[in-house]
Length: 221
Image (cartoon, rainbow, N blue to C red; front, side, top):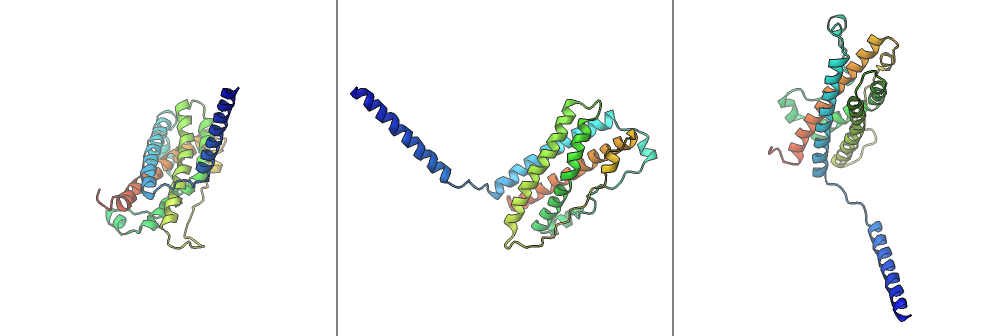
């Protein structure tokens, strides 16, 4: 009987100890990810997303694009074309860190809505491979992850939070064509989304690497 009471006492002590340990862990604030780690993670995410976007573009170009488009249609400007980004090495060196962050945040935000519709279009596309469909979903999800990280970094660069930040999210006007019952128009709209997102995620990836070099490696890279 005494042994049973001792055992129960030890079990109770262990339970109380575990509860106290859990409460102590739960009360501790979440560890803040450093800006350096955020840059490393975002560069990895943007690079992987660019690879997926290039794969989707390649598969669509091979299996669905029509050669007649090259002579019968004019490739429209991407809806993000109005967002200013550096065009040469000199401009890259001159632009402020927060201004470059603002530009790539604008690009990422501008893709939130189009990528939702892009996923639906690819999902419903007869003949699209399972891999292509999965990569389309990944592109949408990764863009949101990249955007969240970019916004965290941007907020840390601000010494004072301004009420009216100079963000400019250009509207996408391609939904009508994407949902068109005319097959040629519908496919051309998907093609342009593939083409433009591949270009834009490449910009995000490139300028994230520039910023990481500047902020994390102090331009020694």
